[in-house]
Length: 358
Image 1 (tube, rainbow, N blue to C red):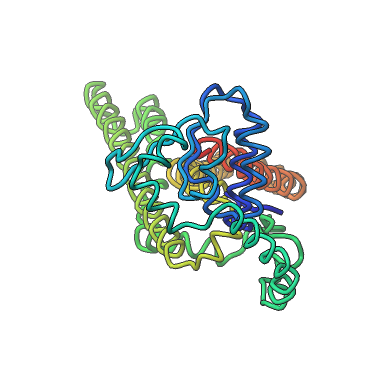
Image 2: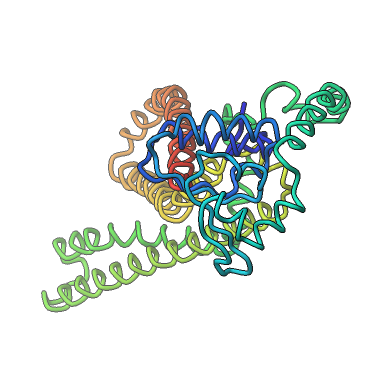
């Protein structure tokens, strides 16, 4: 496994990968910024012969290099010598070797082509020893096993209580209690106008219609105020909880070692801070509020029905096992589908990030 951004590749391997991309692209103009710096002399000569002067034949090649032993090749059309950001000399090799002082000085201090080949031969003879000593170095277990990045793990089973408790603590237990109380009031405010209409219809207080109408309008206004207060407060506390959890995750990520970033694709981190954080910011708070609203509404409805028609309570109790059985089979499927959906989004994020970064 190469790993993200070629983390397991050496400098020479990265240089050869970049040169291979140039060879496959076959551009009209190729800009090669010191392509031989990370290569030994033998490999550098091989790349020069077979790629720069071979596969890229017909392409305008601008090569920046400090390997002056390659300059005497007759296939080089023009040499531009730059020093301190300024062009010092410009011309062909034969012209500069006769009249160029700077190039002559560089050629005198640099090894010749013959010496370069001898040095390459010595490096080739020394490779087995270097390879043997390199194998004795310690490597991470994942690299030794041929794997660099770790597999993303999907949780199994029910959501752990510690996870729920962490989210509740991020909100604040007192704020949770206030939010539940406001939701409960909001549910009862939905029944209050209907209850007052029944009082008005029966004329239980024996008051004029204007009195009942005024109270009815006041009850509706109070209900709307409770509704808006409940929704705004729930959005505020869940938003603050999402911010708190985001800051904790960000702090943990910033304190990780470089090994973590080598073994964890950036797309996985983007997924955590993207889609997962989006669920915390917008969806989770809304779903929890809707959940408790439905719970309170069902409870209030059952209480009203039980008070009005007591025998219906027997049917409600009989339906509870059926609903529990339905939830037992439906909830795991929905939970695992959501987890799988979040898990599969890491790869597109990773591909997009690598594509944008080149």
